[in-house]
Amino acid sequence: MAIRRVEDHLVQHATEGERQSTQDTQDRYAEAPAWRALGNVRRDQARRSDASDAYARAQRLFEALNLTSEAGAVAAARRALTG
Image 1 (tube, one colour):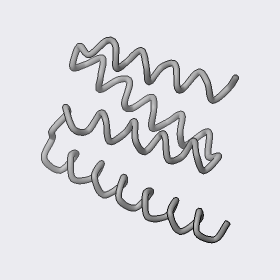
Image 2 (cartoon, one colour):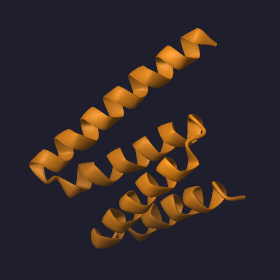
Image 3 (cartoon, one colour):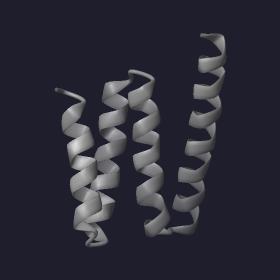
Image 4 (spheres, one colour):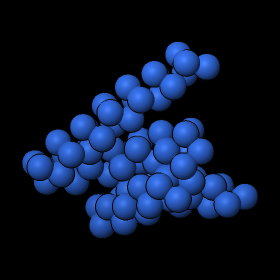
């Protein structure tokens, strides 16, 4: 169990770093997947509200980039949080 917490912390730190890096460079094509990855980490940590927020950001970015299949997949992941 302790190893899982350490792994979760490392993944969370790496994902947040990636997200910040893509925001700094304004690379929307990298930022959207970073928000999705952060949503996945938050979901795995049972932090549903934070996961939903991250997924919403990813979905908006994917939609702005006209990547409708990616936006749809993120929307489904967000809906699954409440199901």
